[in-house]
Amino acid sequence: MGNIYKRDNKWYVDFRTGGKRIRKAVSGDRQVTKDILKELEGRGVRGEYNLKDNKYPVQSLKDNFLKHKKLTLKPRTFEGYKQDLDLILRELNLKLVSDIDSSLIDVYVEKRLSRVSERTVNLEIQTLKQMLNYGVEIGKIKNNPITNFKPLETRNKKFRRILSDKEIEVLLRASTEIYKPVWYTFLTTGLRKSELVNLTWNDIDWEYRELLIQSKEGFSTKNEETRKIFIVDGLYEILKELKKKSKSKYVFVNFNGNPLKSHLLTRFKTTLKKAGLNEDGLDIHSLRYTFISSLLRGGANPKVVQRLVGHKNIKITMEIYARVLPNEERHAIKKLSYAQFSGDEKVLQLENYGHNLVTI
Image 1: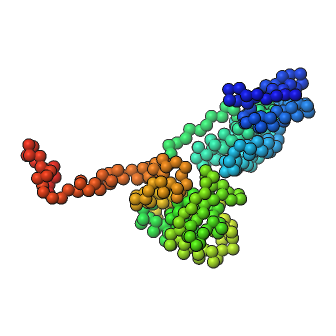
Image 2: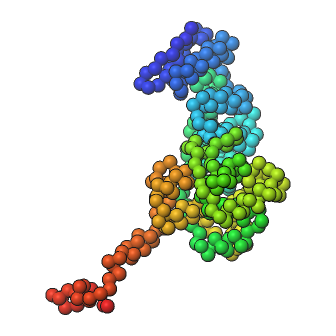
Image 3: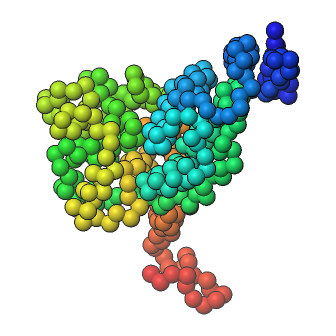
């Protein structure tokens, strides 16, 4: 019978199979390590441990990997892992681990880069690598065929700007009946896209006029936190009208009554073009940026804004403000009361130099 032990903050399994001693480092806590040992010993008894190739079903490996990860990951993070693997298996039509090689990954990367950023692709491939490493770790496959995949170089973070009051007016005037309430909600609540599309009527407190952003079946909030957001008058009236017509549990739906969980960015870009607005630096998240920046520029307490938008760290809130409003420092200094001097011109006169600092 094998055993487990811990050395240098890492857990190991130690057992014998087929006359050979096997010692392996594993990822996880004590209970996870015990489960892996049990799995490996079972494979040894069945004569399955020393695999000659990677002809193992990818779907089975994915199921085992996700079962393992579910023990340690938060629900939202776990869902991200699952979505990454579902996407890769579907896009590449993978059946066996032996189907995976660097050329196939290159095809996937090229295809994905036409739709998402390098950072997103790197995260997806990293999830696949973790699954394959886990397969090696528990003896399901012989090796990880993409161990040498190097992460793509990421471009500098794209510039994201905020909308001016005039641009907001033009945007809303150009919006359709379905999407005008969506853009207006983003602008007056600062919701993330995932929070808005998963908003249900049960998340609205009509008496206290608040939106409750909370985890629910099929959706977890970022950082697993719950927060409340006050509903302004304009949004309150819009929501009441939507409620009268709604037959769905979701607040925002398309003509078929399905939640708006896809194509939002495409619709937003279409609306920008229709409105004749400059698209540079604008995406769905720009609406959230506009909300944050407008509150701070209006004098709101940064800690209050942080709570409203669900930032874990106030640095994130302030970095957004600094990034989208690079000229605020100049405007702030110009507002100094004593810089707008008016009065006796002799106060600012440098008599020894024979001239004034300002002309009044």
